[in-house]
Length: 394
Image (tube, rainbow, N blue to C red; front, side):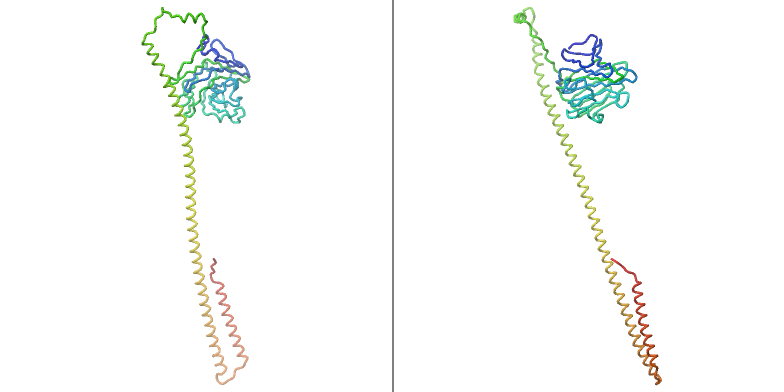
């Protein structure tokens, strides 16, 4: 690893790639400082570990109404696909991007976005809804570098800024073999984005030393090295034993990696199964509630049918009683009519023969007419009373 003179950026030959408007100052990288320009820094070496910590220090200066955005990428494609794009101009990518800008007219914010390679960010009408985490952070004209830290381990993924938590997710686990990159873009009134430091370190569980690429020595030097140097003392036996004991310790680390991957797979399967069970329980609860409502409705319908049957019986009995009363009244009126006729005939005969005197036929006819009128009047009174009685209908 090397380091620029008085710089806070660690680098290795062939690792840092500069594209766009990007220049190296005496003590930092200035990614962008011109209006409507873009710049980027990308690594050419993939991250081979699953657990790591990335420390990123930057500073943003500009006029009062300056603008722009800064992105920290961790993607599978790297520089060839993303280049100098921002989160608003990139299309499809696979990985993570942290956006530092003044979204929504606020003093500043840090937002995290994930993409599995199927979502076109450039054509998203509501890009802000895709953020899985965010926090407010005023980053402009602080007069000091801002310290951003990304950390991923077995417990999840978290982002801290200036030593304070920004956001965290227990279900996000980014894959290895991705590239880190930094891009920035400015507006008409540009901000200056200065990168002071970007250091990637791994945890003790996954730490390993990358093999160094050393050019082969000349042939003359090889011949000299083949001759034993008797002037140098051989290493003590205790050091050889310690080296031999430290070599097999790499195997448990590999086994632990495989075990952790199996555990993560099992947890993902368990989460899927739990979601399925919860969905089935919700469906069953809905069916039980529907059946209960159907049972209550059937009971109410049965009770209503019983009440209707009782009402029909009551109406039928009332009709029978009324019909019997009318028949009894009609019979009594008939008896009274017959008795009146019989008495009238006897009375008329007695009047005709009483005292041996003959009555005139005119008086007889008058009596007959009166009898008929009386009968008609009685019948009319009977019909009026029957029609004026209470009527019940089904």
